[in-house]
Length: 178
Image 1 (cartoon, one colour):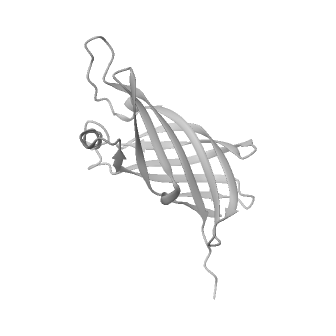
Image 2 (cartoon, rainbow, N blue to C red):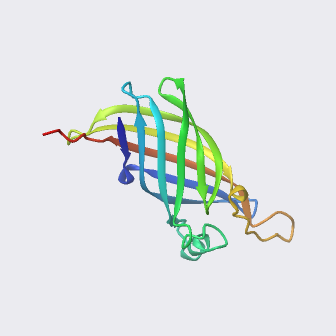
Image 3 (tube, helix red, strand yellow):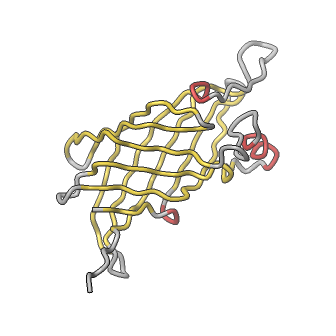
């Protein structure tokens, strides 16, 4: 079975240390994605494409800097791609997802635990499932190395990026053979 991730019901948030003492938070938008499951609903594969140009922290100058070649280089690399190919059931709607995350043309392995809910029918008769997961990555692993040393030690931008995702997926309808 195929499920389409719903961009209107997906929230992708991230957080990074600023000057070693504070946290800057932001969001990215989902462009599209899918989940393939077996007949029992067990996920087999997931793919998501994020819009790198959509990065938003609430400060236009910072957002433009994050889109620049110093960070995401969103002009050359407009998408962030995740392909999860190894999904291990942990019980009670939880799964360990392992896959490849590509940022700025650099691909690294990423793993995290996902909590799922559903299925449920929406008011229009569509079947939906939901998922929540959190994780972290090191931005330097993806070539995001820009930084400024601070006078008293440390750096302006932390290396660890924490992320949190909430998403819904809608079951794809199959065409009826005529």
